[in-house]
Image 1 (cartoon, rainbow, N blue to C red):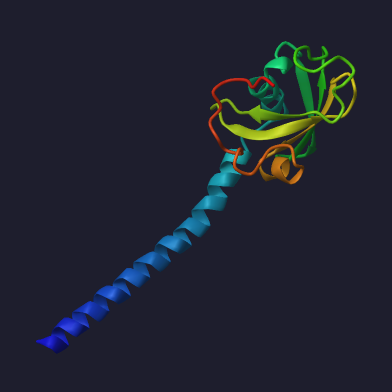
Image 2: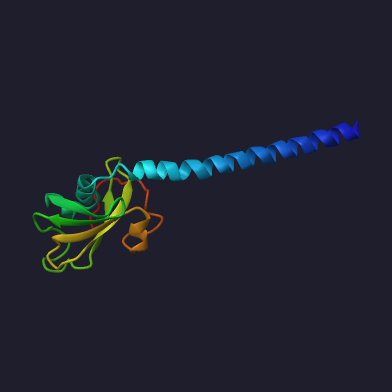
Length: 148
């Protein structure tokens, strides 16, 4: 009886290990595919809309963006300079998060000029690599455009 019990226990352990391995392989295939599918949804217009969605002082600035590196980096120009918490002429180097249509932090932008009308924007991990947003902030739900 012990031999049968031991065999069944080993069989159960083997099945458990095999199931875990299959799940790991499935995740390794699914995660990049989901990331690619989500990333392919971002156009230059989506990036432009994500700027005021992430930061209140960028609302009403009418950004337009062009692709630098598709799905990674965009150059954005504001029709009007931002107003609010930063003094005019002090925008160069300012960093702000971007928020997608689902209210998820999807990246961030850095002001390239003192007037705050030229920005480099980065999606996903590139925004973390550029030190615009923290790793733990990427992918978080936004409660609305940030202030301060």
